[in-house]
Amino acid sequence: MTRVKGLGVAPTLILPLDAVTQTFGLLGVRRSGKSNTAAVMAEEMSDAVLPWVAIDPKGDWWGLRSSADGKGAGLPVPIFGGLHGDMPLTPESGRLMAELIVEHNLTCVLDVSRFSKTQRAHFLTDFALRLYELHQADPQPRHVFLEEADRLIPQRVTSDMAPCVGAWSDLVRLGGAFGLGVTLISQRSAVVNKDVLTQVETMIAMRTTSPQDRKAIHDWMEHHAIAAEIVDSLPSLASGEAWVSSSYWLTGHGQEAIQRVRFRQRKTFDSGATPAIGRQRRVATLADIDLGALEGRMTAVIEKAARDDPARLRRRITELERQIAKARPGDAGEVARLTAENRDLAVQLSEARARPAERVEVPVFGPGDIAALEQHITGARDVAGTLELVLSRATTLAAQPPAPAVPRLAPPPAAAEPAGPPAARADGDGDGKLGKAERRVLAVLVQFPEGRTRQQLAVLSGYSPTSLRNPLGRLRTLGLAGKGDPIMITDAGRDAIGDDYEPLPAGPALVSHWMSVLGKAERTVLAIFLDAWPGPVSRPELAERSGYSETSLRNPLGRLRTLELVHDWTADETLAAAARETTGA
Image (cartoon, rainbow, N blue to C red):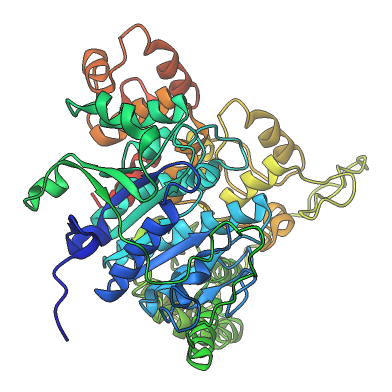
C-alpha cells in the first residue's frame, strides 16, 4: 500500500496528515462549495486511513457512500439516523455513539436531521462530553465535521442551548491536546459562537456576501496585512474557490500562511446538490456495509454501557454503604447477605478500572460502631478496590462481638403534638412535593453523606448561595436536610430522593456548566483565576491578562464573588479542582 504523504484537497494545496487533529473554520454562503470541500477533506482522510465523524443536521452526507455519478459504490461509511441510515439514532444515544466510535475506531456519519432542536441539543451535548472524556483517557487522532455550526453552537446562547455550546467549546478549545480535530461548517459566520470560532487554527473562507459575515472573517484574519483585500474579494469568489489562512500550522510545514485555492471536485455523490428543474431525480447506488458486524459492535457497546453505567454503579454503591452502615457488630448474617448480593457489582467495578475517574465515598468502621463517612476519594480509577475495602471492613465488623446493651430510662410521656409536615416525595406527588432546586440539592447531598458546606453545595448544584436559601430552608422544614454546616442529608431525605437522580457534574461537566451560564466577561475572568489557582491574581494582572480595564472588571468580579466562584482574589477550590481534572494539571 502506497503511503499517503498528505491530503490532496486542491491542485495547489496538500494538507499535512496532522490536519486530522487541527481545527478549521469552513465558511461561505450557499452553493459556494462548502459541502464539496468538506466531502473532499473526508475523502482524503479516508484514503489516508484517518478516522472522522460527520455531524449531519441536513441529512445529505449519505452521498459519500456512492460514486460521483451515482452508479457505483463510494466510501463504505456507516450512517446512523436520518432517511438513509443503516441503523437508527435516538436523542438519548449520544454517549453510546461516542463509546462505539472510540472503542472501534469507527468512521461514520451521525445524521441528526430528523431530531427536533431540543433532541439535537441533547444528543450533541452528551456526544461531545463523552467523546472528550474518552479522548482524555486515551488520546488518539480523530476529526469531527460539524455541519450547520451556527445552529448547533450559536453566538446567542439560550438556556436550552447553553450545555451544548459549553461542551463543544471545550472540545474545540482543548480537544487538540487529546487528538481531536474539528471542522466548523457554516454559511453564517457572524452567527457562529465567537468564543468557539476564535479557537479555529485554519480558516477556509469561501464566497461570502453579507457585511456581518465578512466582518467575522475579517476579525479572524486581521493579523494578516492583506486581511482587508481578502475580505473585499470574498463576494466575487467562484464556487469551490477559497482563501485558506493559517497563522502558523501551514507555515510550519513549509507552506504559505495564506493562499487562494480552488478545491477539487468530490469523487463521491453530491447528495446535497440543488435539484434542477426539469431533470429526473437522481438515484445513487450505495456502498455495502457489513451490518452484521456493525450490529455486533453496537450490541457489545450497549451491554457494556448498561453494565458499567457510572450513575447506576454510584447509586448502587451508595445504597450498599447505606445498608452496611445500619449493621452493627455481630450482624454477621446481614453483612454476609449484603456481601453475596454485591459480588456481581464487584466484578463490574473491577472492569471499570480503565474508565475515567469516578467518585466514591468509603465508610470507616470503628470497633464498636460505624462512624460517618470519613473521606471523599476523588480521581479513583480503581473503584473495585474501593468496593473491596467496603466489603472487607463489613466482614471485619460482622466478626466482632455484639456491643453490650446500654440500659436506657423510659422517657416521660409527652403531650400529643400536632402532626408534622407531610412526607416529601421525590416524584412530586402530594403537598410535600419537591421542586427542581430541592431535588438538585438532595442529589448533591445524597452523594456526599458526610455533608457539604453551603459554598460547596452552591458550586456543585449549579445555583448561587442566595438562590439556595429557600430550597434549603424547605428541605430542613421537611426534615430532609440537617441544620448546621456542613449540611447533611437525613434518612428521610435519602428515602425521598431514592435512586431517582443524575450523578453530579464533575470535572469537564462542572466547569462547562458554569462557563455556559456566565457572560463573556465573567467567563474570561474566571478562566484566568482557574488557571492561576491556588495562587491569587491581582487586579492589575487581571486587567492585563483579560484585556479589560480595571474599572470595567468591577461588575464581572462582583458577579463571580456573589456566586462564590471567586473568593477575594482566588478561584473557588471546588471548581478549581474540577478545572484541574479537565486539563489534567
